[in-house]
Image (cartoon, rainbow, N blue to C red; front, side):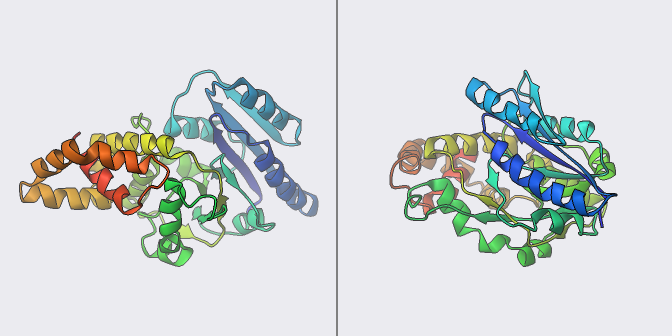
Length: 297
């Protein structure tokens, strides 16, 4: 059994005291039953600009073994995770996103009893389908949920590595830090998965999901999607074989058809985007839009 764990949560403009309290209760239960077990929870605020969020999250400091670290400057998803790695006191690091929910009472126990140096717990898509039927993020995540269950993730262990919910030894986290050259949104986890694969580091995938039930509006999600396409373009060479979109784009490039993608985007791009950011988005258009947008970069 793991005898020490640092739970590390990067945060930006998100109230996460409730999440921390849930985790702390589970961790403290282990602490009370095992006098060797040690833990901490560190939330690093990555330059939030909402004072109400910052003031609310300050309450985290009142919980035992928990601290809320306020960073004045936003350094991005990769750098803030590396900062947390360096802040951690214990040998096993559990990274979690701040906008998720933990509903399983055995969530922590499932991690501290895992034996591998890298363990991914997965993601469950929550929320009311009736209320979220026109939220493009919800529709996208829900459609791919079954494809990313533990069994399927294990079949492509490195390509299925995600930072939403995973544990890694501190030694490996320091050996394979997140790539801070990634300044745009997205793909820092894909890059790390590729680096772990290159060194034959095994990634264990278990059925220990967190719940995603907090969804941004369609316009915000599409802005993030476009930002992720910039990341993919900048690191296109490194991410080959790790992106389905790049696979299809290379087919167009092979047959000198990329100008067609550009022409379609110029003609229909705004129409498609208006649908995806509107009140009745069509999921089938989402991947089409990503490919078209990528073709303009």
